[in-house]
Length: 190
Image 1: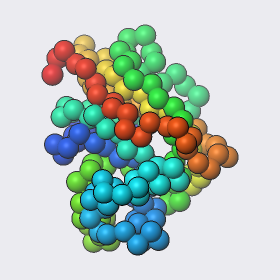
Image 2: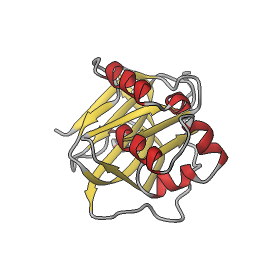
Image 3: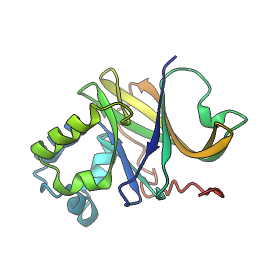
């Protein structure tokens, strides 16, 4: 089975998650001569659009302050959010992501605010603890479909985001992809 699940993942009180190879993002930031406050760079110029177009990072906007179940699905299995007992609310494809350091990680917007080698190293140390939303994955390009909604766990529905990853030869995201799409999960229980 090639599915990884992480529970009670929080957004650091900012309505964004980001998915990517964080060391690749760091190298890209340096190549682009961007400031260590990458969050400010991303909102003040076109750098975030370029990062997405080049498959460096995928931003997820509209992330409410819930504890999320995060799922990475890498096999041909039916994604959790497409199973009959789940409540699918969002399904978006067309994303492409590059992995060059054998690690794929979901992280919060706050990480971008002081995007230095020391801070990234500290984040990597925290992510060595069990239950952090990261997976070891082969290097290469991946097509990513993002599903969001609720999954049934222990007789309760929990907000969830699922990343369905498939290796590809594609190199760039589609030009017309909506990078500001909001993955807001509507939940009656939170």
